[in-house]
Image 1: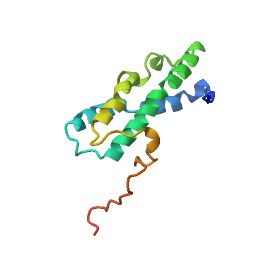
Image 2: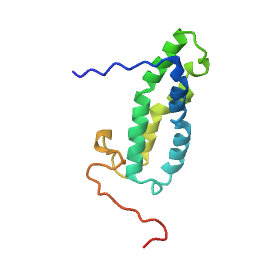
Image 3: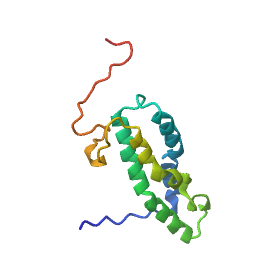
Image 4: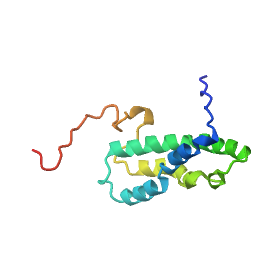
Amino acid sequence: MSRQPQPTWQPITQLPLIASVIDGMLVEEQYRLLQQARSKPHVLDDATIGRVIAVSTTQRDDLWLFAEQLRRWAAQKQSHRRRVGNPCGYSRESPRLPALAASCLRRPPQPASAIDSQGRSAGEPHRHIRSPGRS
């Protein structure tokens, strides 16, 4: 049985960094765009959708970490109250984001472990896209 490493809890001076990470998740915008793309399956390729699934799943699974960090800061009675209740509203849409992205796929989704850092599945050929105006 593998154990998760213990998080390194940050001092309150790191609040701006943590806030920028949380704000950078842009879940509501991603959710809105995926809802639009759902009716137009030709708009997103499967590699892009696979990457959205992998990233949004990781973000969703890390929510506890942000919540616990913010809870610890709150216990220290610091002035970061604006984020304690619900970090950037992320948890409202996050559980549904990977499933919505998967519904845009033209083929069955692959596990996140089968997708490389560029969002390509393990057996997918590497395609080079030419810039407009180049032959």
